[in-house]
Length: 184
Image (cartoon, rainbow, N blue to C red; front, top):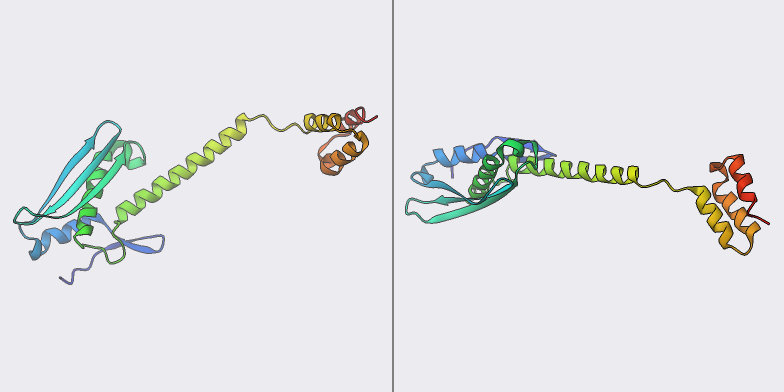
């Protein structure tokens, strides 16, 4: 193996090799002379793609493969370039499976940053969904709960005292007076 020094990208404290570095190494190393990088899309439509990349030696023997899946619009880059992104990821994985640029990880810097972006997008979506649910659900009405509770209890004074212990600071004087009407 050569003394090639891969450029890396630091992502959250860990160094990752970019796909272009793996390709550059593969193309310039004598041991891979006359070898090929071949890609094939096993799924390709308006919404997603799956790409298989293969490293083939001079005897047309498949030495390693890598696969990638991308969904159109799942990230900023995938809004316009999900096919290209998918092919690059598959190539990076095939080169990694060949042993190129894997000192710290099989995943490339491109792959890791895409995964983080997808996780971040997913987290933002979940937060928005929770917020929307909170915005559409009616707020809990303490008065309705308090009235129902007092009505359901046989000892109305004890029920009223329990409500006051729990909610007095949240109730207005008018609301407290209204609740007292249910205590006989």
